[in-house]
Length: 74
Image 1: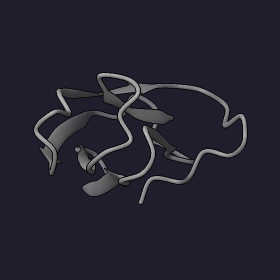
Image 2: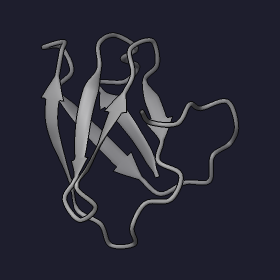
Image 3: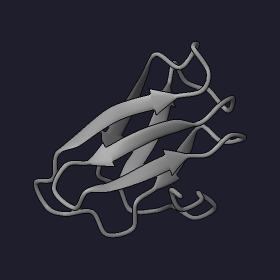
Image 4: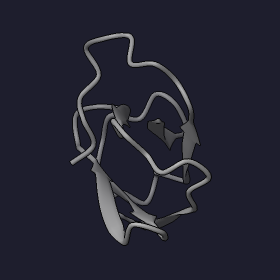
C-alpha cells in the first residue's frame, strides 16, 4: 500500500498514519512524499493522526505494487 502526503509533492515534514486493526503507526518520513507499507491487512482501516508540518493537509493511501525506489514506511 502506498501512503502519500498531500498536497503532492510534499517532501517536507513527517505524517503519522495509524492502522486501527494492527494497532501500528506508520510514519511517512521527511524528505519523501510517499512510502510503502509492504504487507497491509486486507480491508484494513487507517487514520491520519499526526503531522509535524501544518502544510500537510491530508494523507492518501492506495494499493500498488512497489515500482522500486520507494522507501518502507517507518
